[in-house]
Length: 426
Image (cartoon, rainbow, N blue to C red):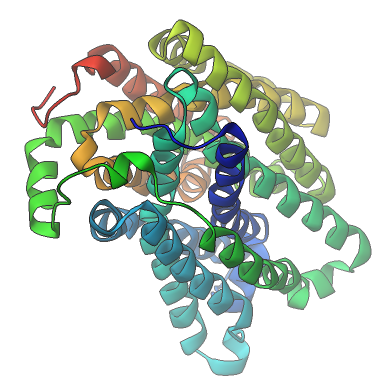
């Protein structure tokens, strides 16, 4: 990779590109935290549990659009440039968050309300399909060779800032508004805040430079060539999907799902939001530290250790929590899972940029990541349904352990980054 930029310039680019991903994750967190109130506003049902499931299904359905967005928008980024792709995904995400914030409830406009909300979630899922990949690839391409793990970890670290901010806003609203006011209209306030930061994010991304790696490429493939390249490398893409699965399942379990899970355990809403903020802060600490460690000792030792820990400890930890639910036990379990998630993710994301061929790096990374997220994003819905079906409140631990087992198998089987020099299957 050609390295012409100075360290201060790189640091500015890291901030500019990572700031945009804040919006995507902030909106997803707000939806997850206030799933019950959003369900009451747009998806009325005969009982509270049914309303919650409808809301969580809408939260998850956006993830089904991510693979399509990964191909279309990822191909756009591989052809037109990293900067152009990052501006386009930010624009589409902005439309999605404004749609949710501004759409009247079911009582006001009837069936049009859930349809508009669903359209907004689908558009956000479409844009998010390439956003994570575009950011990760951009950071990998501007990073010094010996610091790729540290640089790319800031993609995920910026998401944790969104987790903390959204949770603290939720705590403040819960403390200042009566429950009926929060359910009726208070949940719109954090969405309005998200709309207000959009112009600032556009100003930041406008000043992004193109990466030297992309600018140095002699040929930029069109959509058909990129699709053909992805098909030839399909085994590697599927391996990448399996690598990402533990990240998506664990992340949504310990962040967006925490307030809902706490409610199912009978814990106070303010307490579960504080726990979520603590998880975001914990992730923010672990991610750059373990990303830097992966630069020193390699990616695979961290990936293997973290998946093994999740397989062995996730379900026993959940059993311990659900045996005698308390905020103290919830924070202990979630901080443990946070350490596993953040350590794994710090090595996994940069590893994925390394095993995807350069000519389809943005689309290949995004497609693999989005396929996993289409499964992991349904974690809040899936585990809520499983709890209702099995009457076992510890079942989220089994869900996470299963995802970790799949990711461990992929870690052991996928080729080393140094061998990923062509589009041949692993």
